[in-house]
Image (cartoon, rainbow, N blue to C red; front, top):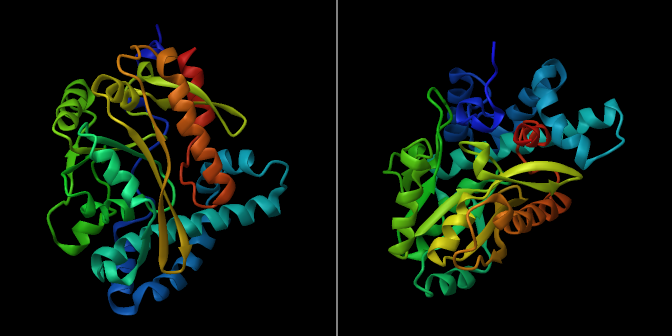
Length: 314
């Protein structure tokens, strides 16, 4: 039987999933803990849940090992076990913090947004803005604090059917504060994104996971290996003359996060159409992300083998 050409595979064959770990009951339990006991009570119970998953669920532990084995080379089993615990504990805290913002209000979290003026100056250029973030820290905190931009914000987001984890606005019972663009739509939402930028508005995209065909990805270096990161956002930025601001967040204290513009990437007009035309800009993003993992190694939340995916493009 003839196998499918790997270059033709699409999001249905993705190596990662956006679906949350845990059961519907488990999530509801933590939401109740937050509502009646606060953030610290939820953290307390979280520590025991993480111990169970890390020590007694090898499949969960393996998902973290892909990254941890590259970030912390040469560690033996006890050290790797401790690393797995720390990274999953931080992931759990990020999910709890996201729920806290929705259930108890933004005032329960201290969010420091650095370089706001830089983003406002980029918008003044009149070409819109691409905010490129990643699955680090608690990126949802960024989405909760973008009102100062005073323009509509559109989020390219693929949400899986049956996902039980709620976003902060769903907890709060308010309308979605940003407009969703589904990458599974016509042409991956490209025409819609171009229209948004032409109106001087903002698009927020994830730069560390591939949505759609590998034909829209560039192979770049990351943590000592080759990975596939999407270049579609840079291609759109080139077509519209839009700046790309890399926005990353990290947990800075038990109740605090810092959001920071890691760098601004400028793509020249009509830079091209192929991977080689945009690989240098994708590499800039990868470098910013690698610097992030050096400073915040336990707040990088991609739990799949990123370094295997590039082989599908050979």
